[in-house]
Amino acid sequence: MPELPEVETVRRGLERVTPGHRLEGGEVLLARVIAHPAHDYEFLAGLTGSMLSAWRRRGKYLLGQLSQPDGSPGGYLGVHLRMTGQLLWLDPKTPVQSHCRVRLWLSDNHELRYVDQRTFGRLWWVPPGTKPDMIMTGLKGLGPEPFDDSFSVAYLRQRLGRSRRPIKNALLDQRLVAGIGNIYADEALFLSGIRPLTRCDRIGPKRIQKLHGAIGDVLTTSIESGGTTFSDYRDIYGINGNYGGVAWVYDREGLPCRACAMPIVRLKLAGRSAHYCPRCQR
Image (cartoon, rainbow, N blue to C red; front, side, top):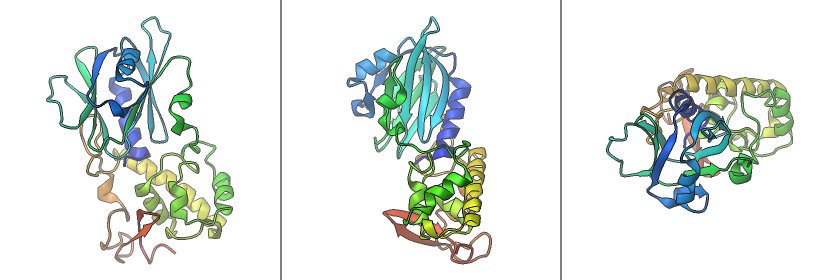
């Protein structure tokens, strides 16, 4: 599943190419990927004629800000890529992929195409005057962004200090911090020397401070690399990310640790994989 760095990479790509383009129509090829409005024709009608002016990210959600031709607000185009979703910036003449679900035609002969093999992703049109979290209800429960001031060492210490669950599970909880998933939880725990099964309330202040810094470091490195290469992730031009080639532990079961050469161990934790080095992480 795309995590914060992958979604941020897509956002930055969209921010470069879509502002100033007018949505001239589109085609919904699979109606169930439209979460709002209730009918796909309402979704297209709400978007058509609007200008894409900017993109922002909240957790793993994308919000395309829309404006009307007279400059008044046009609402938002919301997207959650989930497991296998892709937003691709293409020439409309490009052959339509077998898993293409939505096509949006933009001015100057451009197309924004939503492709999703497993169809878990969703798209929304948020009407003008409506707060996105009133329609995209998953936004309501999100914790602070990892790079926001509100995600401080003190905040992390306070939240972890009263939890008895494994630290890996805590980092995957979007209510604690928005945007971190399996890949970067593994990586941050390696950089901070903490095993995935360690109980939150048993992590001391110094290690929490180290974990806080590691979260920022690993996310920054991955964003600079364009995200992690995995089977379905692509940026808006269909290109994989480069972070996977330098990952410390994620998806490296049995391979030597890059720091100490001890084989990386993989375990199951609440239905998810966790990777760690038995020597570097205590």
